[in-house]
Amino acid sequence: MFPAAFDYMVPASLDEALGLLSRHGDDAKVLAGGQSLIPLLKLRFAAPVVLVDIGRIDGLEGIRRENGHVRIGARTRHRDLESATELRGTLDALLDAAPLISDPLIRNMGTVGGSICHADPAGDWGAVMLAVGAEFVVRSSSGERVLPASGFFQGPFTTGLRADEVMTEIRVPVPTGRSGGTYLKLERKVGDFASVAAAVHVVLGEDGRVTAAGIGLCAVAAQSTKATAAEAALVGQAPSDEVIAEVARLAAQAAEPKADIRGSAEYKRDVTRVFVQRGLRTAINRAQGVAA
Amino acid sequence: MNIAFEINGAERSVDVEPRTLLVDLIRTRLGMTGTHIGCDTSNCGACTVLLDGRPVKSCTVLAPMVAGRKVTTVEGLASGGKLHPIQEGFHAEHGLQCGFCTPGMMLVGAALIESNPHPTEDDIRWGISGNICRCTGYMNIVKAIQHAAASKAAENTAGVA
Figure 1 (cartoon, helix red, strand yellow):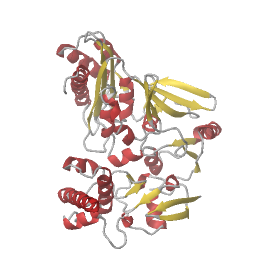
Figure 2 (cartoon, rainbow over the protein chains, first blue to last red):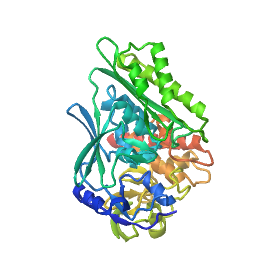
Figure 3 (tube, rainbow over the protein chains, first blue to last red):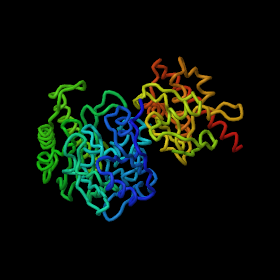
């Protein structure tokens, strides 16, 4: 299988890329690592007139800490985030998710921003970014916008990104206080999409109560989903087993899974509950400095 | 369009349609058939090549994406008539049955012991988790990579002494 013909453009700068996108609009598609787009091109589910390869543009890769945020260049490979062990202890959900994405070879090519913009409802980063409260920096010829992860995922493969925009950076706030998180994923085999996955992130105050909580769900709705009612039920609480069980129950209510080859809707909803419960225990233990 | 890149240490310049997949460029245009096409859907890893030293699936890379970069295929492992330690490992440990997955497995193994000279069995199994052996000969593939890591380590020690 090979893609339908397209015009291939390799802009040397971001401005050049944005000019191409504003000129070609919906006819153009941005190519980063290609690990989602190239399969779609080969199946001819996507047949853009113009492919804009942003692979040669400087400044889109790398992970750095600045102004209270971890700033992840949108073209950073999954593999490079997987190796960013300096995030351990502050943003565990990111580090736990990275090695569970597809397989090692795909992680060597695929990019964090590309995966987020592709917005597969079973893509891993969406749930993680919702849990850690990330923001996405996007650019077009007419300027820059900063979009919160919450609200970005609007449906299957549908986001708040406009056709003339490129995501340049993911900003994750560094938690102030003791924090912990994790990502739990059920997959039939390495390389498969999640049957169900959940990302959790908690911050504890001086008194041991939860001051901030993030819960993101993967593959259990038409888009990556933030379990806001469950989050609200956790904030302000001293985390007990009873609280965690109730929060997990609320998170499962936010899931709208569909039955498919990977399981029934009831099964997926219950795995959601179990994963949020287990994940919260791990996250809270980590925040408390208890070996998990 | 014209693309120039390095393959197995040699500079090459070729005219390709932009939609050409890297695996087709390597097999059809360059005549190097050691890189296999298995599933053609990014699942099996038979088409694995190294791109700037990292294993990738060449059925899921467009040819123009490798312009200016270094590609290594299985043909690039041996040098000067001497097998690469990973090839010796697969030979010594009977790391292949039908051989279809072998080029990919060897490239993944070679990249693994380059970045992690003393891999545990878990590291190896994790490293090859994107490559499928349909003969299910994983036990010996793992042993072959362990063998290669050990002989490479011995070589390095000898070099120091």
